[in-house]
Image (cartoon, rainbow, N blue to C red; front, side, top):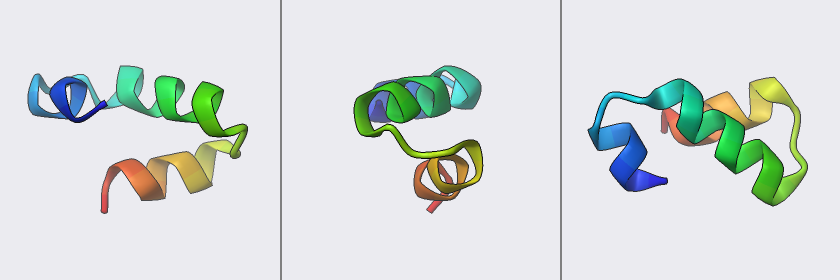
Length: 34
């Protein structure tokens, strides 16, 4: 996930995080953008 963020692919990172954790969009977005 960190490699996606560094590559400027936040949307893919958020989708991956949501699949991995089952969190909602806002929670996943907040976690990715910490």
